[in-house]
Amino acid sequence: MAFADTLIAWYEVHKRDLPWRGETDPYKIWVSEIILQQTRVQQGWEYYLRFINNFPDVKALAESDEERVLKVWQGLGYYSRARNMHAAARDIMTKHHGQFPQEYDKILALKGVGKYTAAAIASIAFHLPYPAVDGNVIRVVSRLFGICDDVAQPATVKRITEICNKHIDREQPGVFNQAAMDFGATHCTPKNPKCVECPFATTCYALKNQLTEVLPVKKKKTGQRHRYFHYYVYISDNKTIIEKRTANDIWRNMYQFPLIEKDSETSSEPSEYTIREVLSHQIIHATFYVKIAKKLPETSENQFVIDFDNIHDYPMPKVMTEFLKVLETK
Ligand code: SF4
Image 1: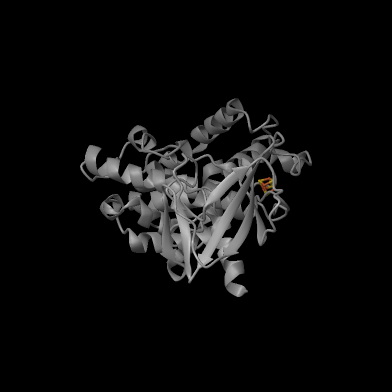
Image 2 (image 1 turned 45 degrees about the horizontal axis):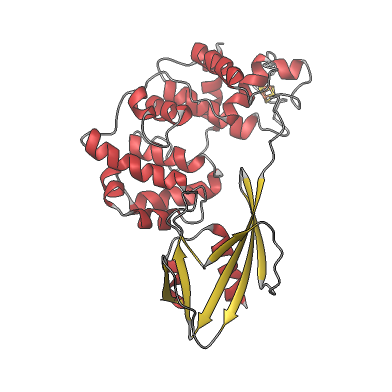
C-alpha cells in the first residue's frame, strides 16, 4: 500500500475529534491553525470556540478593535498571532473584497501566515496539493524515511517537504495533511511512539535501525535572554494606576502596572511577589511591589487611574494575570 493510503487508512480509524474537523470554511481553518501554532489542542479547543463565538467571520474580526481581539485572546500568549490575524482580516476586507483568498501564494501573503498554515488552509479548504509540514510531520518523515540531518536547518525541512510533496494524496490533500498531523500528534509521538501497533512497522527506518529516540535530530536551543520587570502596584481607595504598553514587542497595546525594566531582579525595596515566565526567546522575571497609600502618585504619559475592580476589563500579559490571581487569594 502506498504511504498516503496507509496513512489515510490509519486516520479514518484514529482521527482526533476536534471542533474544527470537517470544517471547510477557510476562515475557521485559519483561526484553528493559528491558535494551534503555540498552544496545546486541549487549551486551543476552548479558545477556538471562544474566538469563533466572538468573531464568527472575517468581517466581524476586521471590524473589531484590537483591544477586544487581545482581550478574547488573553491567556493564550504569543499575542502577535492575534494582532496579525486582526491585520490580515482587515487586508482581506480591503484587498480581497471580503473573500478569503483561494490561492496558496495569496494565503501565504497574509500577515502571520507561514508556509505550514498556508498549506493547511489551501489543502483543507480548497483541495490544493500543498503539504503542511509542522513539527509533527517533520518527526514522522524523519523517522520513516531516515532523515538524519539537523531538522533546525532549512535545507533539512526542504528535503522533508519534497518527500511530502512526492507522497501527498492529490485527490484529497487536506485529508492527507490532517492524517499526517494526527499521526504525529497521537501515534508517532516524541516519546514512546506506538511502534508495536504501527501500520509502518515493517518499513520504518527508525524502527528497523533502533533510532526512534535519536530521530529527528535537533540542534540544542540557543540561549534565552533574561529580562527583569519591576512592577509598581499602587493602591489607594480601591483605585490603581495602569499603563498601556507602547514598546514594539509582543505585549504592545496591552495593559500593565507601571513598569521599570532593570538589568537584574534585585532591588532595595521589599517585593510582594516574583513570577517567572519562560517564552521561546526570553525568560521574564517579574517582581511586584504593592504600595498602599492615602494618595496615588501622579500619572505620567500613557498611565491612568482605574477602579481596581475593573482591572480585568483590560488585556494583560500573563505575568500580570498570574500576579492578580495571587493577590485575589490573599
Ligand atoms: S514505527 Fe514507530 S517510529 Fe516508525 S512511524 Fe511507526 S510509530 Fe513512528
